[in-house]
Structure formats: C-alpha cells, structure tokens
Length: 129
Image 1 (spheres, helix red, strand yellow):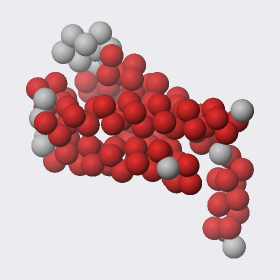
Image 2 (cartoon, helix red, strand yellow; image 1 turned 180 degrees about the vertical axis):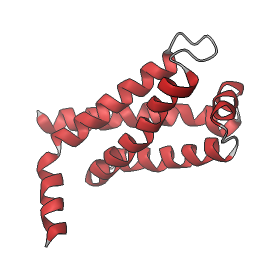
Image 3 (cartoon, helix red, strand yellow; image 1 turned 90 degrees about the horizontal axis):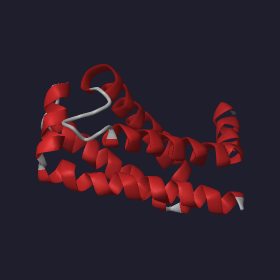
Image 4 (cartoon, one colour; image 1 turned 90 degrees about the vertical axis):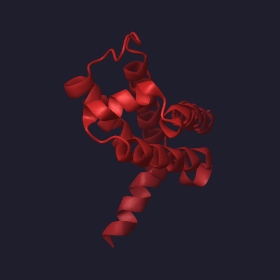
C-alpha cells in the first residue's frame, strides 16, 4: 500500500507541474505577469520551467522519484514564498488557484519523501562514510 501511495503522490505532483509548463514556455500573460512581478522575466520563467520539467521526469521514474521530490520541494517552496511575500495568495483574480496548486504539490512531494524515508536515510548514511 505504501508503495502505491508513494507512486500516486509522485505522479500527481508531476502531472500538476507538467501542466503548468505550457503557460511558462508559451509566455502566457499570467506567467509573464508573475515573473515580471518577481523581476526575473523571462529567464526566471524559462529557467523554472526547465527545472520543473526535469523534476517531473525524475518523479515519474520510480528509481529517481526521491531526488525529484527533494528538488521539487525546493522549487515549490520558492513559489509558495513568492506568493506569501510578493505576489499575494490571489494573482490576477485566479481565486488563489496557483497558490493552492503550489500547496498541493508541496504536500504531495513531502509525502513522497516521507514514504521513502528508508531510502533517504540509507543514502545519508552512505554519504557520511
């Protein structure tokens, strides 16, 4: 059961991240607005899009999903902090949808890491040697 839950959480997080790539890579007005507010348009928009694509691929592959989840937590934490301190919860009348999706992805990625804690602990133990 634990294995299924980990796979589902990783895949759902990857799907959410992948669906946002269309907006980042096509220069959708909402995406351009967000990254202009952050002062990192266009390089930040395209760069985070590439990172999210890599993270999604890592999440979809069972063997690399832990790495993808850890990287994803870092990236999505940046998005959440941007919403909290710069953009606001609601961006251009979206009713907080983007912020809500970021919270969902963060939760799914954290669940993915927690469900693979043995793998993480083994990795950390081997790094110490």
